Image 1 (cartoon, rainbow, N blue to C red):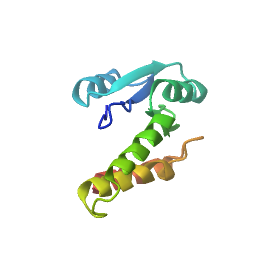
Image 2: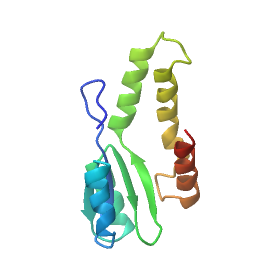
Image 3: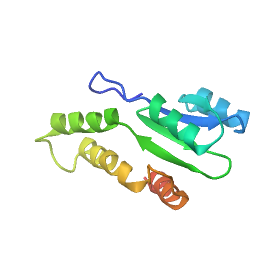
Image 4: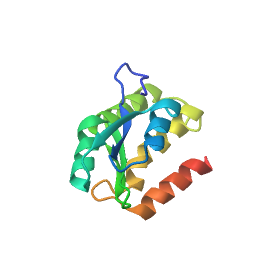
Length: 127
């Protein structure tokens, strides 16, 4: 959870019963993120990501998946921008905020897109 303003942004992962149990344990115990298990099928994992998290990630074993950004994520970014207004444009917080603002533009939230998801991961790993 990210909470600089007092209102948490809940981030998590949605998996199906077909997910490797070790990956679920790793996400919960090492990464320390919330994991929800949904019925198999894009319509179920998409709905679970939308309903359970402000930033929800899902990937099915068949390759479908994406990242969803809910209203609280956008409210968080707007609130942080208001708090940072007037600070140096190239400070670390401002740079991080600009990167957060761009994240939703890098993925196809409607249907998922393996190429854009891969490029997002590549961009994050590059940092």
